[in-house]
Length: 114
Length: 111
Image (cartoon, rainbow over all chains, first blue to last red; front, side, top):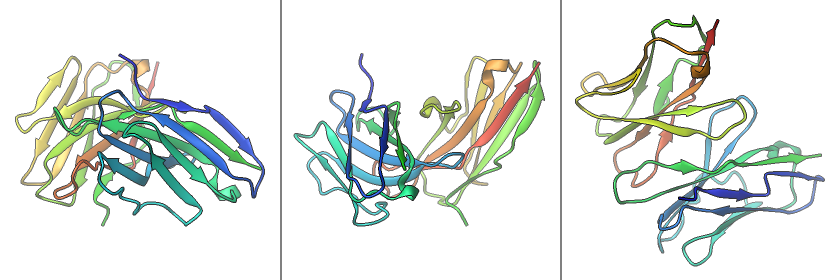
């Protein structure tokens, strides 16, 4: 079946502009996660959605970052007034409560802020 | 202390060698454990879950030691294609569906 998809695959933007990154989770997965990975670094948790519960936003680095999940499926991560330190790969993952906690990742969006 | 700790490596091994990675976790009540593999400039992919009794998948063997709070991954007969970063991943107690990722151990298999 279809895996997690993300768009765009690459995004170059100028400092100060807003960007939106999209994630389509695996159909039927109730949990969705956003992570960030800078070059050569580990995964940095950003935000987590579980069903209709309030999201866990504890990993968002600043109030310039926000995310929505509409209809329990597609999610959008928005970064306002981008800064050069926002340059990273943004990874989305989804998981199902049935069968375990394994997360399945999308291919990521590579964001470059110039 | 980090919640999930791994030696970053790199581990440089020749083809055909056996290599083992360890990972320690801080929370003794952790429930679920995984190894993920991440190739350069790619997303992490689930390699295998780690069960209490230990489990094997082809050349890969995973072990869990709850008393010492560590997980291991053994790769036998290393292939060039095994070169990647291996991430130790733990579902910490009281974390719901959340997984905590270690920083990864880099493996380079050389001809």
